[in-house]
Length: 306
Image (cartoon, rainbow, N blue to C red):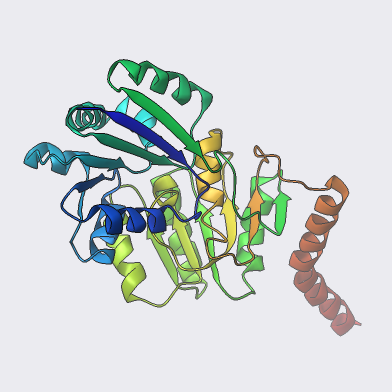
């Protein structure tokens, strides 16, 4: 039996789910298995396709050992991050299933040069390896405004002040404790807030389906992949993201339906076009808006004294 490997790369929100749906229609349900490293995404796919297609996490497959001639590995780049560290069963499941399937399909939006070199080593396991690249490590929708903020303290002031427009703002934090602290801080100021940290994505996904969108979503990188979100109008980064793959996935949480969105970040690793003078002028304007109410109150007090 000929064994083929297809690597398909496309930007986030470029329609990979629609492509899978087309493949399901052509192949039928019985011949296809989808492996997702994300429990919440697997749940959403099962609901979307009414349970007709098998969608499993690597851990679920290890317990059931179901083989199919066509296997799709979604968000495959995570094998190199998680499979090499705290989830080694991801690689074990990959090679076990690929050894049986006639066609193994890898889906991702972010595939680095290092990953590419490792996949070339798979040639001893497959008769043919094909890479169809519709856009790798790129954003389909660029934010209409990208402000690079140098000061974390200013970023925090902006978050509290800037929530004046409609839509949901997404705040990415580095640590679980920071997520909880910010969630409580914003709730005390009357905002509707959802929070999500590692291990909570499946519950969060149910919340998205059941409730009206909040003012803020505060999360760690757990929401950088997979889980469907309400329309995100603004994204804030409270820390510098060093990994370009995760940065792309995180920024791509905005504009998934083609809508306009803004980003406030501490860096610009992707090289989004921005003018330093325009950037500094916008920040100066925001600083003035933040300080103006306090300045106005001070003026009133001075006049009252007189």
